[in-house]
Image (cartoon, rainbow, N blue to C red; front, side, top):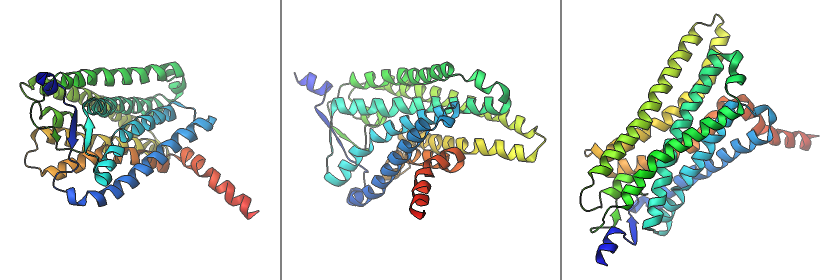
Length: 316
């Protein structure tokens, strides 16, 4: 019986941000504000694209996929983080911890696949514009989504299974704000080499392959754009890609930093690493709809139309 308890602890204790416990109450306010902005922004994107027939195009379908994934990522972590910061709700059940880990890592991998699909979308739109609608049909878009989804979930399911099979016979205190894979693995007894190897291999393969293909797509896009004779056409092409490049940088840069510092960044203060890891799951979902809303005229106009319409009615 004790062995069973060690293998399956009843609960873990999430510290929050180690070293900044005294400031948790105040840190929660900007976290809560960013979460609200993320919810409003992503739901607005989904609503605008759904109700406006002119936006029923591949680019906006991919944007809706991104919005749905971002909602899952931030909602799987932020409410619990706010509970820790405001209500000292540090305990999380073992199964709930594994499920949270599954959503965080699984949907992060899915988002990476969707960002690759969006890069392919921009490549087709700029390099072969006459064949855009014939290449990216509804059935092709659906297949791309399922490939990205199944690949991301498929790679990360073994990760959570490996964590569930470990024995936990020491401390149950996780020095993190959520159930990050390596933070949980560090609490396990015995050999965790398979977890370490699979975790870094899966993450490096997913992010590495997607990054390479995204880079190739934009290299081909850049070559095609520079070959355009019209300066106006070049600026328009750069404009359509600018928002996507910003989203890619916002997603990959803090994500990779958080992932690798968890393993090798021993010289980085713990509170800095944990704070950045928290922001990684909050800032991209908040910024993505803002970036696309500012850069994409159609979304901006449709999102603001109800307010301008009301103003005109009040004025008349």
